[in-house]
Amino acid sequence: MDGPSGTGKSTVAKRLAERLDAAYLDTGAMYRAVTLAVLRAGVDPADSAEVLRVAESTDLSLATEVGARPTIDGEDVSAEIRGPEVTAHVSAVSAVPKLRERLVALQRRLISEAKAVRGGIVVEGRDIGTVVVPDAALKVYLTASADARAQRRARQDSAAGRANTVDATLADVERRDRLDSSRAVSPLRPAADAVEVDTTDLDIDGVLDRLMDLVEERGLRATAEANGR
Image (cartoon, rainbow, N blue to C red; front, side, top):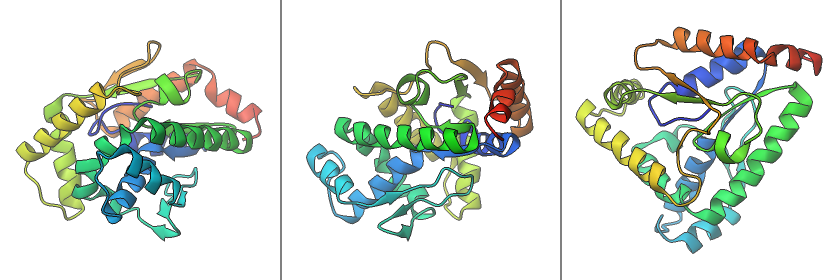
């Protein structure tokens, strides 16, 4: 499942994994964790060589379960990686080609292991259908208007104690869209065979119902059950 921020991707992906009793992986949390490590090291996020050096010297761990907390060097950083400083720099860090190669290899390994154990996995990010798992049985690309996404993000920030105006959030959403869609490696875009779901006028349950219909149409629930779930 791919798509820009504010489309409901994380919430829906988690609930879908729970509904299917499947594993779950948030690849964006990996890039955010590396970004946090880079900032803590005092490294310029635009310095590709230094970003890679920090990533290679950082012990990043993330289990493939809903509610799994990412850690760096054994420290739970699940709250800190969602802060404004990480959000402001994650696009620059995630654009480093060698870092993406490193994390894509890790993501593929985690996905393969989870499928062997659980029979299925829901993976969310920005290049899952195009790069990480191009042969996935179902690829979904969530979209929503920029205004709707900014309002959702502002509500999330407020709930987390991070006050922000909708206008400021909209500017940040549009900035990240521009950076993630224009990067040279693995730009944010739907896979050619992805099913696009516009969540602008849908609540979480409405999006989840649509995704469950797609899962049933592809016979993926039956496949997971046949694999031992």
